[in-house]
Amino acid sequence: MPLLTAALGALDSGYDRDRARYAAVLALALAAAGEADAAVEHAKRGAELAAQTGSALATRELRRVRVALREAGADAALAELMEHLHALAATR
Image (spheres, rainbow, N blue to C red):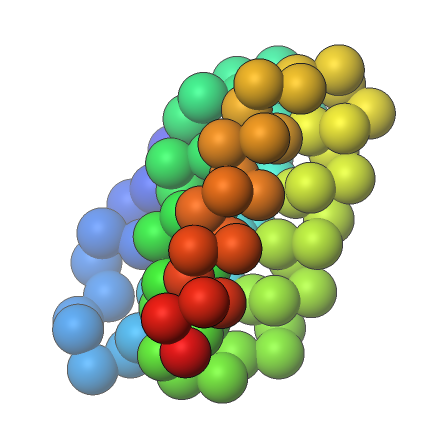
């Protein structure tokens, strides 16, 4: 995960589509590692960027994050993420 974190931090703001995907991939890795709270924080940021850029790749990865959280039994984290996604969709 340190490589993903470093890659995400190194991207300029002009690469928002890439930042969305990397944030989503990092969220998926964190969810798989059992770090649900950190996964949700990165997933939220990835979702915001995916909504701004229309990134289908990031959106696909975010679906996988939801599945990983559900499978891990991280119900509170999943609920927090879903609330954020619904709020984000409502503003569009």
